[in-house]
View 1 (cartoon, rainbow, N blue to C red):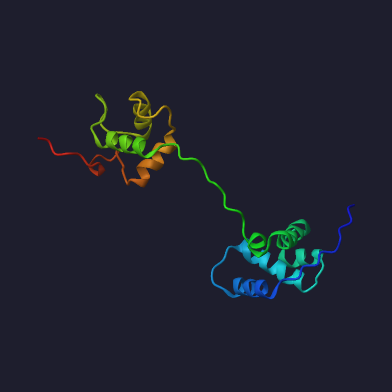
View 2: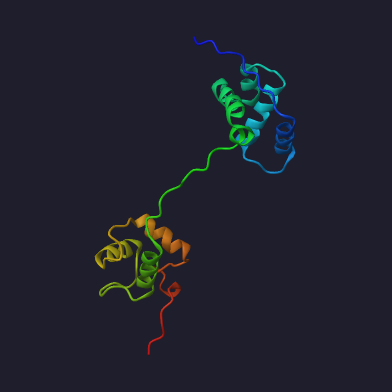
Length: 159
C-alpha cells in the first residue's frame, strides 16, 4: 500500500470567498459544487479520507483537487478544461447545397426525399465526398426541414 503525505490546503482569503460564492450561488454543475466542498473541508484541515467519504468522491479525486489548487489555482481546481469538440463534417457551402437539393424535387421515380435518399444523392451528385445519414438527419433537423412530409418542404412557384 502506498503512503501518502498529508495534504494541507490553505485557501487564500480571496479564493475562500469565491468558493463560498459558488456554494451559496444559484445553479452550478454538481461536480463544481463537490470540488468546492472538498476544498473547503481540506482548508479546515480534515484528512483526505474523511473529506472523500463526506463529499462522496474517491480519495484520489480529493487529492487531485487539492493538488490542482496548489499547482494551478482555484479555477483549475473547480472547473474542467475546455474540450475541443468534434470537427464539423460539412462546411457551409456543402450544407447550403444539400439544403437546396432537398428543397428541389426528388429524383425521378421517388415521391419524396428520405434521409437515406438525401445521403445517397449528395454523394452521387458530388456535393460531398462522403457523409453519414446521421449528419444529414441533424442538418435537416437544424433547418426544420422534413422532406418526407411533402407539405413541409418549401418549393419555388412554377413559372
